[in-house]
Length: 64
Image (cartoon, rainbow, N blue to C red):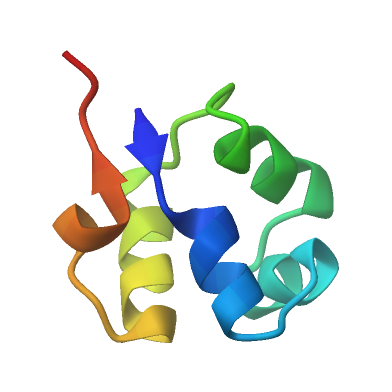
């Protein structure tokens, strides 16, 4: 799954550790999601959407 998490994090001057703390996961989880090695759970995707004030679809896109 493609995502804009790294870009959004950078635009908000956040480190992976800060984003992890805000969303209740580990920094390693944030790293894996940004690299496309791990897809977030739906509750985690909702936390990202709420934090960045965006829809889930604006952050994540299914790869064809």
